Length: 511
Image (cartoon, rainbow, N blue to C red; front, side, top):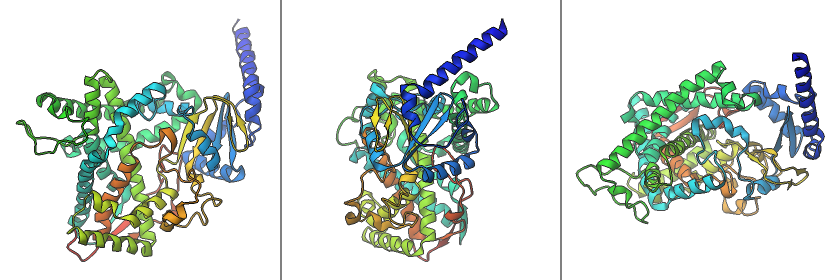
């Protein structure tokens, strides 16, 4: 009886496999080039490689199969695209806004927030959160970002003399506090040792999510929960969710004690100033306030609020932190460019009596070009994935509805067809004359189309605010060089090696 049942299962599986491979959709996918695979399991062994090995495998395949290729594993096919024409077809189509099932691994942590949701739910969340990035609110956020940049610089100055830092743990402490204060309205100093636990939990969670996403059979929570990594994830989720729930409770209690007075002004064009009081000190506006207001209007539940706070914390601190590491490393390795940035910063600081504000940050055009060029070479979100909602004609191939498409921005940004000498760090690529005739989808550090990054203006302001005091007060000298850094597949672009930099004090009053 058991043998008969087993034979039936095998026959049914083989029939489904043949249909997936040679049915209408399978025939279209088969036309796309790609490395040969084994019967039934396809290219599964590639997905079981280490993160570093898989990065190297994809680098080889990206050059071997230009501009498109596929990988297969059981019933699943992954189509990798990099040509700007193809990226535009996917990103600019309002029908292709659904994230692929690779993002399922994120859901135990982020639920169905702005990053992972789709359809009407995504539209509602986007509508609620868009006012967070209104110019008037960004001005308040800039004050926090400038304070964090100055605090980071003071920590180096207080250490005295030349100091060498491993950039990732050093910078992430301050970018985490910046996003925590702007998104939640709470300083990590109020959270004690919890902040270090949170940072470590985020980084480790990223590794687990990639491990899970690369193993199709672990997409089911009950299967993953049986593994040692599944049990580890459960502990990490307790830390991550415990952190956000504690802060949300504190913010809701604040609005309860102030009788919701500060929530009443959120939909107005002018955010109330901080001097207003009703017996309790007025706190700065936070993204969380919009979510709390929406929950009072019946649009969101407490669980919905946590989804969005978790999402913004994840996307807001780690992406910016890694971007800062790469920007500082590039400036350290290119002294002539670093000197030009410092000259611009010195002029702006002198003009503003050594103080920064929104306008002075916007005036730093050369620094902005350096940031954009660094994000070209090292985009924090270096790939995204979508599911096609309908049969789609790409530049060279027709792909069926329901295809899992990987959009590789990292490779697009280094395509010599669109970027001459692509490995060279050259901020002048972003001069107006050089931008004018460039393919609009050849540069996508914040994605594009309907699901572009909602916080891109915030991110650029944060990077400027934190870089300026460092460059104004210190010469940057490399210890570890980028050409020697190893990379691995991760949720964001991250080096597997330490990224150390030497900060040499400048003889100036500074900040």
